[in-house]
Image (cartoon, rainbow, N blue to C red; front, side, top):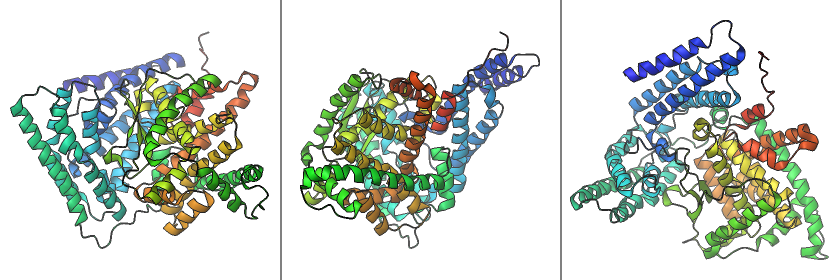
Amino acid sequence: MIKKILLLALYVAAFTACKKDGESSQELSLKDDVAFTAYEGHFLDELWKYNPDWATTVGYHKYDSVLLIPNAKTREQLIKFAKVQMDSLSRYEVNSLNDANKMDHRMMQNQMESLQWYNEQLKSYEWDPSSYNVIGTFATILNEPYASLAKRLRSFYQKMANIPLYYKEAEKQLKNPVAELTGLAIDQHLGGVSVFETDFADSLKETNIPAAEKKLMLDRAKLSADAIKGFATYLKGLKNDKPRSFRLGKQLYESKFKFDIQAEATAQQTYNSAVERKKYVHREMAKLSRQLWPKYFGTQPIPKDSLEFIGKLIDTLSSKHVAPGDFQSAIEKEIPKLTAFIKSKDLLTLDPSKPLVVRKEPGYMAGVAGASISSPGPYDKEGNTYYNVGSLSGWSPEKAESYLREYNNYTLQILCIHEAIPGHYTQLVYANQSPSLIKSVLGNGAMVEGWAVFSEQEMMDAGFGDNAPEMRLMWYKWHLRSVCNTILDYSVHASNMTKEQAIKMLTKEAFQQQTEADNKWKRVSVSSVQLTSYYTGYKEINALHEEWKKKQADKYKLKQFNEKFLSYGSAPVKFIKEAMFAIPKIDTKH
């Protein structure tokens, strides 16, 4: 308590000192920045105390052994924390801070406002059973070699103590859960319980922990596994005659979009833009399809309906794909090819010292996306980055064929650009180099996803795939995913688009395979707003790039733009734009 009072006194003193008369604006800014940087450290220390699971995932391991019980008291403490931080943030004059701190201030403020809104308005703790999943954090402790295995297993053991109570409390919090989210929670818990049933025991065998202690640890792991399976059983048997709709509704959707995406435009405006973008992409695809038609269909007449002849060409190109058992190995082979291309075109500086590990998607992550990146946190920068690949084992031949036609030999390459190089993996390596922990910890999803989409376009423009019109056509088809993700998400959650309408749009207008469209419907029914991040971020980065290129004129270099843009970390694009075009402050004393 004395330490906290001294810290507070330091911040107040620094804040007061910055307001003395007669000081230059530069001196004022310097003192505000020093005080603000000190405050950021305090903010993060407090944030992790109230969010120990999040702390573990970003590489801050002080609270690895803590599992908070999800009840009203915990939520009240979180809201109080947010209000205290909002008060502290209000003491700093944003415009007196340097560009980096200005971004941090705004991101912190958004996070605290968002935290209050989630708990007081959205209240997903009442209707989203999948939000009560502890398995991912335990898997991180088990799998990431940030400390000795014995130390990590002891943290794992201590953290398990609260698991039975955690799930009993989760059952009490749920009121009218969404049916789709209930199904997702059941699948993820049963799919991930092996972390406690087998993985933990296997790891214990590799240590010299005394046998008596191991027995205590294994006994608790069994209790934990039983609690996890018990929660799944509870959800299966839950009588819920009037479940909440998975649709958010327009008002909640707009608010969630504002906090999660932090875009220049509203959700409605972004949806309108996506509708126009879809029309543009269709026109470009029609041009390429006319050019390619004789090569694949000879003298056959071109159908009058442009969507029909585009679809026929895409269907023909999609037949070239790997075998089901070769999907993961094909992805592994793409990584060195992408690295070589980027070096040859001098698009970006890559850091070969940061490992990228392609792995089968863990069970506790299943059911949302077929491929994803798990990055090491900003406190654990030397950790592995994982490229998670969904497994096709157990799929029917028809379903596997449909999936592989979607991820054919063309789009598999684009997938690797998006997820790995120069997409997510590369951007997150740059983000971890940023001196600002705030920008990494509170990273903006639209910037992260937007960069991945923008990087695909850059690679196409640089001639990736030998400038083949087939590759450009298939990229447009892939790009329609981002565009239609936004249209789909807004139409479903803020309007009343039906499953039939959604599947028709995805298969007929976005040329997706049935399996992909079915998976996307499942995804939109268990998530909201996140699907808009791809197109929103892309749109803003693309506009920023065009504006930057125009301003730089003959001094413009793509590599310089890329590295300057990425140097700001995972901040919202609108904040990066402001910093990139900021006029340098002039020292008034000279």
